[in-house]
Image (cartoon, rainbow, N blue to C red; front, side, top):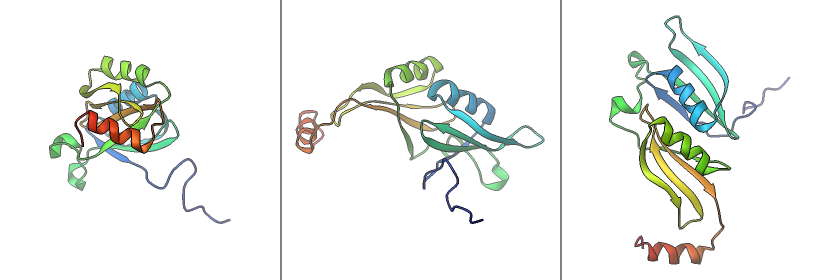
Length: 153
């Protein structure tokens, strides 16, 4: 039987997050983003070697830090250049959970010129996230006009 090159439930690009505190991170993502834990493997010391979660229709993977293997999270390296952008059906409801969790808000939730309701935060593990809900489909011309009016162009 042939093996599919792409495992079931995955897309071609799958983020894999390194965190200091795997169990707490799983709980955080479940509570704030509605993540569903699919699979988890821990070592004898309890550290997460591999966890697989689904947020909406996307898979993410996660593991604890293992500095001896060169695997450290964003707090150890001074931050991350990556933002995980998550579309949800109710951005305000997810945002309420994010705020209640005590995450660091970096851009308040608001309607944006490109047609999304959008806000960003840094989670307790140092990863950056954007929460979005499409609320309208502006034309390219409308987006350009709004960018100019907002002082971006």
